[in-house]
Length: 106
Image (cartoon, rainbow, N blue to C red; front, side, top):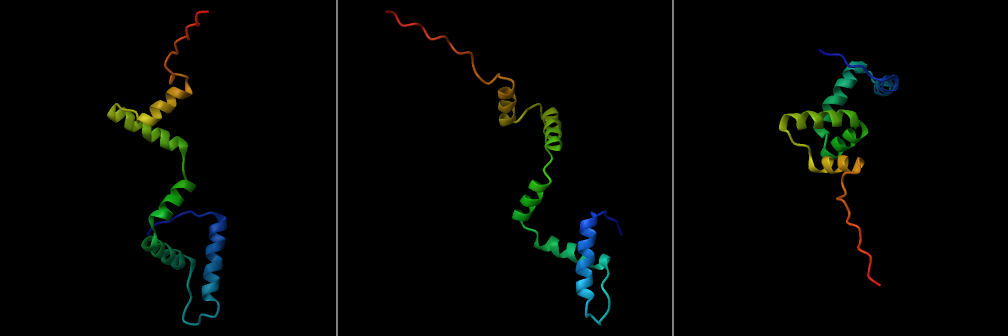
């Protein structure tokens, strides 16, 4: 058995779902814990790649990503090519020195 913390809005939503299920149900009573367990088990079996991408996008953390990339770079000794190019561009190091155009003779 474990515990999770949910937002007040989620707690209210779960209460509304449970109340709706119990309304007119004479075969017993469903509580919020049972309802949350049922929802999570059902969600796991129906979770697809589109939903995974949607959840990841909604909870994307740039700092955590940079920390993980840095950790991987320290372990491997290599920085991803696109990140390296982006860092170089950020600091103006992406352009090779340009040769001055020779003036045309007149």
